[in-house]
Image (cartoon, rainbow, N blue to C red):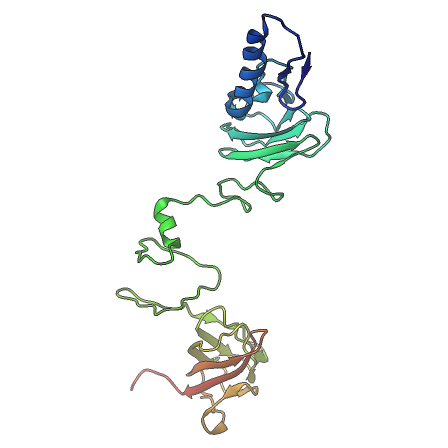
Length: 304
């Protein structure tokens, strides 16, 4: 008798198994194919050493199952060996214990593919190594790891709709640029930028991706340098304070534009406060500001 190379079904030879082929067909072909296509098995990890998911010619074997669920408590990292045949598996990792479960080809010498605890992964063997079935980066399972697809509820998915109006009820934190091609209206509550403290140095440099509102305390004569990471149309305020010594001057590089081309003179009294209002006119490809229109209002203090 001969068997198929991958899932080991009996290949009937001409004239073989006379009057008994029905039994052989049911046991060594149909049952084997059924297991390979839709079979499920659970595998306990509560054993020592690597777990070999072997396949026996013409017989139901746990290594032939399509769905394999790992159960039990891991005491250490566990390796699972699959036959050196091309096959796809769906692995359900229901184990506990903070250790890795890695699938490898028996005798293949490959580093294998780990299946994250608490998740379901599709993996495949190409007969020499085991790899994620959804790409050659880390497994693309649902989860919180860097390469996982994030777990998303139906309520969250509605925010991806392109045409329907939806209400976002929870707090959303964005760590990169958010763009809108329509108006943004705040019906209640508020929209604001948290003021950002600028490092005092000989050249005061605003990093405009930090906020729209800035404050700096001058501890010497300073120059307002070219702001970085700006966006045309960005506007806001800069609070300029004198330190406890006072008499600090403030000059400007060429991108700063003032009415009449005359730079304002800062208030120099101790602990005084001036406010520069600004609007970014143009930026370079590097997002360095090339023109910023500004106006200074001086000597803000409590009325006498």
